[in-house]
Image 1 (cartoon, each protein chain N blue to C red):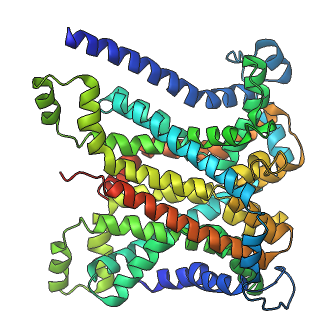
Image 2 (cartoon, helix red, strand yellow):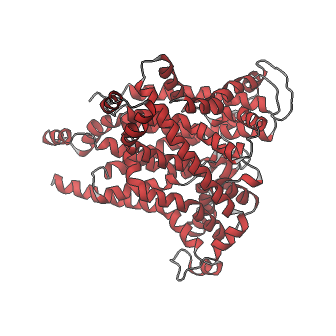
Image 3 (cartoon, one colour):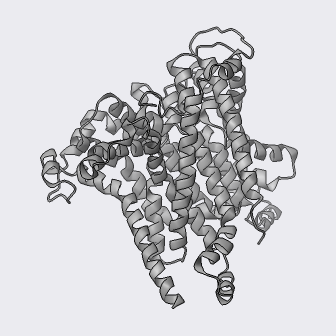
Length: 271
Length: 278
């Protein structure tokens, strides 16, 4: 029963993964028939010439803004619509709608909106045109698209919190804020773990929006790590070096994700 | 007193939520409005509802972007990817969950779990050169293999989480009645998997229809372009008229939005069942 899946997985993931480790030790340009073994040179170069710092900074800003705003907004909305009724289900469906749209279309829609919709109407300049705000402009696109996913997860978790806890708190005279911070929030930690892990993963792998909305610019103000790998490999013909960055990127993602997951898991309450 | 304050608070909260919802919907509104108006009308009436139905933008968008063939190709890629993933991921997940104690199936499960985190950038170069070597580069089957392979791990994972909650007794009964493995899978397991099948059907449709990063690497030549890549090429090269652009976007998102609206109940319940349990 597992044979078709294993063959496909071996062909598309396992074999290229192993091959990728090998290529990261070569000076291959991605096209030529031959290449030289260069040992650790690609990795050393990565740590000696800090070309990766700007993409890394952009990726971290993008991920950080996404993590905070996406979760805060989603949490706010979820607490308001956690009761099951038609109106609330409708609102939830509305917030999820942007998630169905591709990041490419979302990017183009927003670049047009920024330049031809928001600017003439509200006088707010297109954030993608200014290096200082471009990462924020990109973040807005992905928050708009991903918030609904977080809401779905939060609402489901809220619905599992027993009403009796709130009733008991009310009898004890706990205020609305106390009830939120002492009951709702602790009970939501498992959902928070899921959402933080998801947004973290999506953020650190940011690619589509950069390629479609800004092409990495202005200058290199929005070039993400994933986009930098793509350009190094296929545009600048330094495939071996690009492959080495990709592997370091993978290690970074695994480390970041497991640290964050561990942090939140340790705060989950038993119920 | 306390009750009154609570109500005032919830009215305020609902208003803010309504405002947020309006912001979320605004781009869709603008998209539809612009797509249905002529240029002169936009200048005159701005964001007001159009007074008549003007479809010229769609005609222009379709003739200028090669959107029709890209649309058909994307449909083909999506349908095949979804079908393949549904079948092989559910088969694999079933085998893995029911044989959890075996070393082979156990390590297979962890391999898939680990692969979910994998960024595509790690495998894209070797995959590109492998596909170029075996003639799959810039072909529709190649793109299908690439997308399916890269989505497989996540599919096995969500299928497995669901199958763990399905009682084994019916399968055992079928076995006792003499049903073989494939028969048991087809006649007993698949019907029980319906909820997760619907969820993964929608999720796979989304990821295949909307895929960009696999497409950029594996299918970028003229004759194999999918919708997302066709849009990227078109808007990367020309700065298109905004009306035409929005008409093209509308064509690209309409099927997916319709599918979502029709099946959103199943999607949301499936997403939450799969993930919140953890």
